[in-house]
Length: 338
Image (cartoon, rainbow, N blue to C red; front, side, top):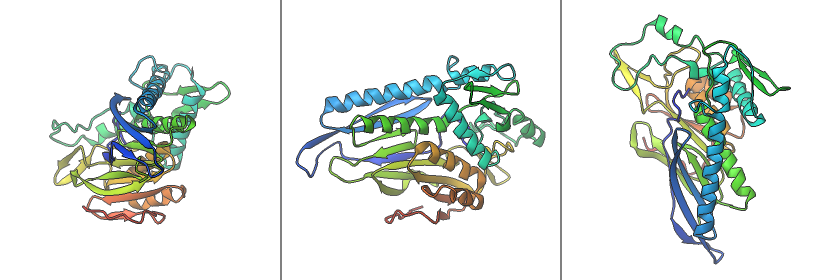
């Protein structure tokens, strides 16, 4: 699972800034980059003119900020922070939006037996990936680090719309799942306004819709986990979500074995076996939950989980460099270059 405020994805999209459409009128593409929800957001809008595009980018930023102030676990006044501050004390009433997001997150916890768990926020960060670690944490320290982690201790009351964390010191945090949710909401908002093409990319949790001004699909680049400065593949996409979880950005090596910064919240140990998972599907929140879960579960169990989500497909890269595609992966022009 991802245990930072932002995901480990690196995705790039390639586009032309201004092109003339085939039907004879000009469309303008505008992009803006900003820091929100603890990470980088790249917002791209295609509209009839620059002013319209820029105004809608402003609206997207306002919507992401609104969501951030609801679910951020590091803003002390957010509803999620209020839940965390009252862990072991009392239930906290939250907006239906926050309640429903929590409920969906717990669903992923249930179907992965805790491989995905939003209460990971309570983990004691005993693994250091800043170069300061000289030896592995002890088994006792690892066990202690996850004492306050456990989705079964999150109590939801749908009648009163409250969340209660049973243990003092428990915390929940949405991290990249929240970024995926935000990109979905912005896409829905733009489509409702008649903005028929764009990309909202929350540190790699990406929602795309429509096409470039020249009528071609967006070109989505997936990072090569063994050479992060290069692309593994470029995939055309007109509508849908793409999310990547990867263990290649931060890791330590002890006795010749590589330990990544993605920690299994059920065990406290770093995941092994896969170094990158990219999930494609209609919804960025679900795609993120799946890419995170697949990294933790590993290739065999992960592919079995994905079969329960027929609208979603994936590409996995194993630690030894093997490319694995789910059975329903349907992108024809996929040519991975490791």
